[in-house]
Every structure is written in C-alpha cells, then in structure tokens.
Image (tube, rainbow, N blue to C red; front, side, top):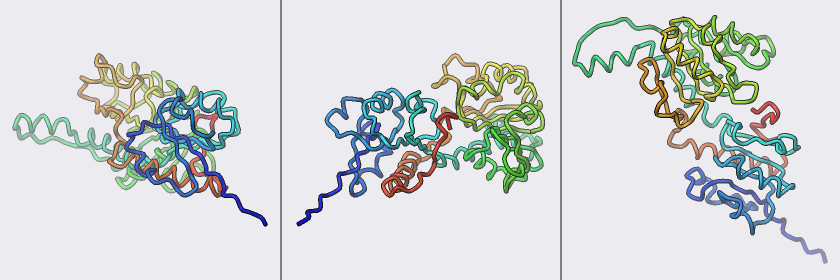
Length: 327
C-alpha cells in the first residue's frame, strides 16, 4: 500500500525586524509556506535552508552571507524598487531570479513630482510669506499647461509622473536606456535614448529624474546637463540622489540659473545639517518620504505575496529585474 507523504513546506527567509509594520500581511502565511523572520544571521541558525528570500529594508549586509551559506535559494525578492544597496557579485552572476517592489510606490512618487512643479508654478512660497505677513498682494502665476516635461528614466515611476502631468496639458519627453518602438506611447509625445540626455535637458521646460542608481547612472546628471536647463526650469528628483551631481545643482541654485528644485533623494541621507540645500528658498525638500503613504510597506508585502503564489505554482514572476543592469 502506497502512503502519500506530505510535501515539505516552502521555506522563506524574511530579512526584517520582527516589529516591521510591513509584515502585517504575512501574519498568517499561505498554506504550505514557512516564514522565518530575522534581522541578523543568528536568527536563521536553526531554520531549514530557504527556498526564497524576502529582503525588507535589510540589504546586502544580511542577504550576502545567507545567500553564500544556502546555495539552494531559488528566488530573491526586494521589497523596494531600488537595488543599489542589495546587489553583490555572487547574486548578480547567479541564475537566481531577483524581483523587486517596482510599482508599489509609483503613484505617490508621481504625485510628489507634479506637486513640486505646482509648488513653483503657483509660487506657494510667496503665498505663505504673504499670509504670514497678513499682506494682500496680487502676483502672476504660471500654468503647467503647454510646458514640456522631460522625464529622465522613463520606467514605471517615470510613466507614473507622465500619467499625472499629462492631464495638465504638459508635453512629455521620456528618456530611457533604449528608445524602442515608434519613439512614443500613450503618455509620452516622444521617447529618446539615454545618449540624448543633454538635448532633453535643453528641450524641456521642466525635468523630473526617476533613474535607479547604478555604476552607469552615478552623476549622470552633471554640471553640463544642469547648465543646459532653462533659467525658468524646475528640476525634480525622485530616483536616487547620487544620479545627480548635488554640488553642481547647488551652484545652479545659488547662481539662479534654474528656477527651483523639488528633491526627495540626496547623495547623502540623512541630508547633513551643514548642506546649503536646507536654507535655500528655491528648494522644496522632502526627507525621502514622498512614497511613505500609510500603507506603503503593506502594499509592498502584498506584491511579494502575489509573486510568492506565482513562485509556488511555477508561473512567471512579476517585476523581474536585470541584475547586471541594476534595475
């Protein structure tokens, strides 16, 4: 008589602090799944080897030793979209698929980008100054309608920015590594390849950056690119701080060669107290919280659970990344 044996549980290491609020959707694991949560190597010492790893804000420092110790890992998922703090050579060269939280945070980042444009177009700083002084003084404002918005990094976040800027009547220029297809889509009026960056900076009335940080994109937006902006331009960065030469940006702001910037990301985070950006009137500064909605971490875990079900069924995973490209 044949006796069927129960299938062993799928083991997933969750690299997170036990009190991480984003773990709420994982409180009751799916049937047949064992989740092991920890924020240091010792937390996994007595656990069986993992089939998959869910990295929740704890990156390479913990993933790398676990990955090397458990060659049977068949999938790694990063809660966030940015991978610059997670990748290491053995992971990049391995056949192990890597997915990320791409799409979980794009709506809010798109809203922040448009809010930054409106902040300067409607001159909200002047409104606040006049309100504080109890002074009634009329002044002219700008419209977003008719302006050209260049989006450097026309991926998921870039398209989210475009989707929110387009209804204002803005013309959209998208920039990505390759301008595949006809060079436009339902949102972008034109899509250019990355080698036309400086041309895009000059052709745009405003520019939003949504690039990931890789060796190729570090300081991609440098002195020459910033100098190509119009003096009436607003510059927004919701990608990674080190994509932009921050010192060159500060110089442009100090000299008034651009109108203003709205920044959610910086080369050094937290932004040092001695940074001149803190005290500049033409800067809207967000402490990397533009995507911190009430449910942002829960939303990211929900995406992981959707991918986990696909992994269990042997179906294609969503949000696969190119490990060598870094996004």
